[in-house]
Length: 425
Ligand SMILES: [Zn+2]
Image (cartoon, rainbow, N blue to C red; front, side, top):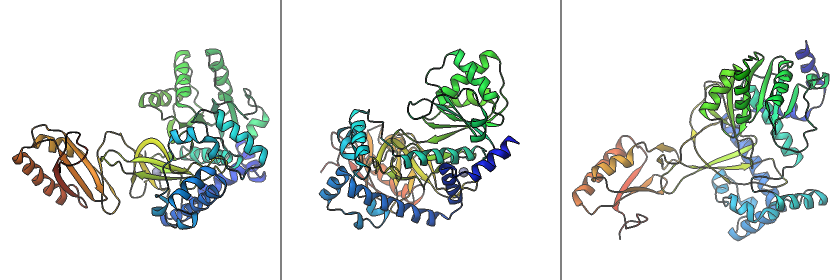
């Protein structure tokens, strides 16, 4: 009954977040090409905004002789400079858009000056988008408009106080917000009582808070039974935390991949894949010149207050081809470890390097081996040995590898210099 009332209320009221969430839900069934075109249009419009109103972007693009109208494809987009955390820290005030009302610009610049690098001032539209994305991500674990969302929040700000008692208002709105900045056992006992009264509900919050809660539930021997799923934005839940939350709450736990600068990047589905939230963020996989795992760069296409374009997240990942068993059309990616070897083919596809380097090292008696991605499809293998016979064995191995395990790649073998940076001339 309450679920039905909630659903009707969501439909009748003009709640921006729900409307956006429904739009996004419709997008996930679009063909990839259409989604990509739409995404490019959004990114290009956003870039124009950045060039016209953000001093930092105007400077760097003018220096490169690039204008927004020159960027007509994602290939051209990739010529834009990468935004690092260091640059963000140094040029914070220059990254604020002048398009906001004057008072807001002053406040944002002040905020940007005073804030730690990870905090990016976000405008209302961007905050609404984040909320819409949270709802969208909750649908990945089974949430519907009829169900309750219990939001465990840890950041201060315009949260409107802590609502410990789900009253009629919270029930109808379908959201219970719980301030978890401090969590003593007494606090947790109160939260558990509040969550219990919520009926069928879904948790949204930090993995570490949830796992602390799970510990508490275990300690006092409580089984909630009404929590059906959990989404952990930001910090990825460790395997152990995930296990603990799943066991104590008796529900699935899915990660929403994001960082403080760009909160909603990709969402994990029941198939275990990460779906890129293409309507909100544009993700690029930048090759590591030394054939390590590709870098994840992200553009937040919503936050006009402080545009974050081609931001280096510090994470490594690769795109995943094909469709997901869950039926969602959002493109796929997966996170990979920085130490892994990845090659880029001439067609722009990433191939895992597996044990290529250790195999080459074995062929030349354990000598140092480094691989350099010279160009797409071209890899230089640098070996720290002067042994001609060993070099020949490596040559033979590379010829064979090109034809079998690594199609679309050509390897050239050279002796590395002392620092193994370049081939010996
Ligand atoms: Zn999926």
